[in-house]
Amino acid sequence: MKCFYYFKDKTKSRQQRSAPELKEQSKSQYSGADDRIIKSSCSANSPRGIPEMYEEKAHNLRVFTFSDLRHATHDFSRLLKIGEGGFGSVYKGSIKPADGKGDPVAVAIKKLDSHGLQGHKQWVAEVQFLGVVEHPNLVKLVGYCSLDSERGIQRLLVYEYMENRSLEDHLFNKAYPALSWKTRLEIILGAAQGLAYLHEGLEVQVIFRDFKSSNVLLDENFRPKLSDFGLAREGPVAGNTHVSTAVVGTYGYAAPDYIETGHLTVKSDVWSFGVVLYEILTGRRSLERNRPRTEQKLLEWVKQFPPDSKKFGSIMDPWLENQYSFSAARKIAKLADSCLLKNAKDRPRMSQVVEMLKQIMQISDNGNLSDRSLESSDDDQADPEPRQSQLGPAESWKRRMSHLAKLGEQVESASRRRFMIMQRAKVN
Image: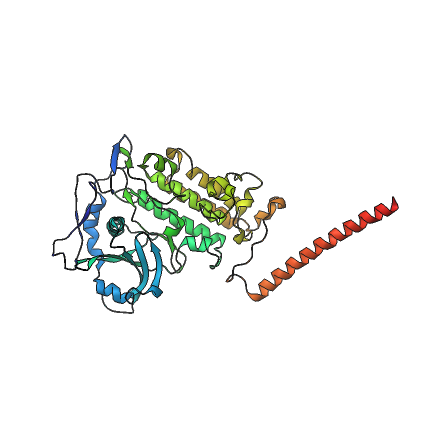
């Protein structure tokens, strides 16, 4: 682990750590295991790295004892578990404000698996990066707990609580109400602004490296915030074009050039953003094994319906029920295609993506949600069954009666055709 920073414990190992301090094990910048910097002629100029910036802002984070967080989660009750992954489990909890005044505040507490090396590395990265970054579209780290004792090692992170869970939940889980077209655009714009800040808004360039719908959390107002910085890395320093690193991430979202070469750049994030743009349009995951083989991989499936084709509407999420701007949807698909270009250098910067999304939102606001009807009706999809929380009993009854009426018309039309054929046969 020659390029790995860790927290140096200046107290006895059995004591609660009051604040983490960073120690460098090599002269290379912090970027994780087996990361190397490849020199070239173009890159951002960064006088300081994340570790140096973190040391200045570490005092802003609260340091919790393990008993504090155990009490906050009712001894890590299963009833309060709201998420689980390779890193460990996430619980909903409540803590007192820093000044001890006022009502308890809801938080999300991530408890890392004490037996996983990768979990510890991701914990270090999250404390460092989230201790430095500050943006409305990035989740806020409230504090942490780091404890070494005879019973084992405990590593926990405390975040602001995001009431509406993730974009993934609202796009793919039918138990949730369908996201409206306007809300989808607002969410993806906010996510783009968060990535643009990481890429271009700090002294050092930050590559998120794991952008996907499950890492876009939504607060009570559906404002999006990027979460899970465990795989984040500093971008290349001046005179370098990329960071060369072990390939990690999520299948279906990682850029093919990064997978093939291990060369990591901000354009790797841009590719992942393009995938999520298509998820926003289609309501489909990047990979769905339960679909027909030709439809399992989202990016391969949408290629059959180019943005300028008459059949483009076939890819749109049926839960939108045609309540979207068709011209804006076309432009989003074209933007997604530009993010998914094979040559990473040809992909737009996230700041450019933000500006294009703002223009698309203006087009969508000025147009009619029903402009879908201007296209060929031959491409219309069957109406999906309504989600449980989306329609009331009266609306559901009207929908069923309308459907039965259409079926009756079709049967009556078919009966008339058969009657006319029989009459012609008698005449002949």
